[in-house]
Length: 489
Image 1: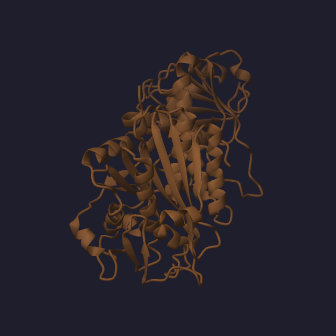
Image 2: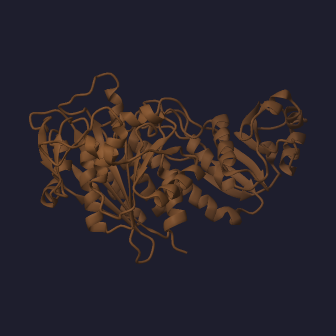
């Protein structure tokens, strides 16, 4: 598993800067005003900082971006990184500054002179997230990440905010690692084992095996995995940090590999279907974050872990299965399998956990990618107020999300003569028909959000805070939602 860069905070001490190795980071506002630390570095480097800040390159630099002075004269450091950032920056700019520092220093050690700058916890979060690299299966892993020390006026005042920020980073990285793993490593059994390890953080973890799932009547979920050698499982994770209030339930699709089943996918690009457990990965990351920061809330995470493979025992197009709710489903396309998994786990979550609200996440439809691309997840909800709270949290954390519709017309598209519903309504409005399929498994008056993360769970190019590949989208937004709406005191 990927280890984050070790980030510590210390009281600012400008003595000995000339002997610091690795890189020195300096935060300077757009006006070019040098702080005491910046002035000291400028003097030691024979005026290099002031010269850089007066340059055209600095003038063109956007806020949160960095300018690197390599091999500065008068300093032992290999580089001085100048970051344009106001003393009281916005959250997004502070995180962008941290990411810029991570890109500039690579694996080198860093001493950052933050001094009186506010939101240094957000700088640390950006620094941690952008430094991520999934290297578990590389024979040459590269240089290990050296530590970073952020020098501030009062480290004690920063302690709680920094601890919480790094807990979020740990959750995001946990999700990225899970999504990045190949399916021959992250089997359903291995996935469950990694979640069982959360017990060490105080999370209650229960693993439901196939015999128990059959006893519960989860015929929809079990139909997806019956062609695989990997046993289907449901993992229930309970974080009880609140009082007696009903928990928020987070439900994730965990298809560790999706061939499409008998409705076999084209070969081109099928290797990316290792990420079809992205919803379960996000739920897992959120649960780790909540535990690490000791969230004063009750949250239950439930993930359905299956593998969708073609086999003589696999579900066929035209088969009819019975869900835990008793709703019968005609499987017209075995590649529309994630909704079958979620149907049973959603119903189980409501029956056993009696939640105050439910949010499910899934890399569910290509149609959502066609609609929203890779910048926004699709948001579907039966409760406007609840949806707006989530959208506000996502916006605050810089995670793109956009509301898409439900409605009777979409329900009509999944009607069928042979069963209560069919598992796909065809190409038109594919993201919405998948969403209303899930809505059939939500109790009346239960606040519910469905997040289709097909376009945002894994991306083909680097983002501000992540390299190409798994993003961990959703961990920060859901943690923010818990903080703002479900924590006590």
